[in-house]
Image: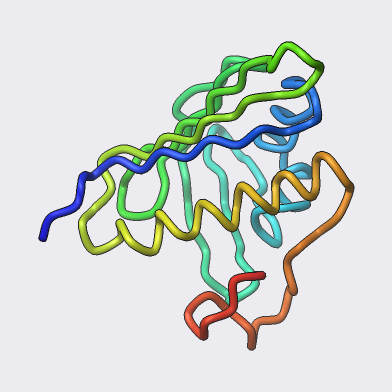
Length: 144
């Protein structure tokens, strides 16, 4: 059965859009919730994950503090849209388009981990990841 090649998740964050955007758009921010490191050079992000996997990802759009988009696994496009929630926080919507069928299930579940790790980091200063290369997504661990 072919799944829709779009993934969409929303999350409410207590932090303002400017703070959330810094976590998405800076190497320091990304390393606090998403990857062991994600340095940028000439519009290319080099993600290094705890399991040793790397990903070269192009920044496709930067519109601080409302929109940040990159290409992601399988050549998909991941777009983060940030809007004020009217109470000092952020409503973030992640949309991943052009997701290859073979990546859809892992990507859909993986974004939940990424978004909850973002919430923990930006709102509470907590890193939910285990940083253990022996305890990875491929081995059934969700806290990588």
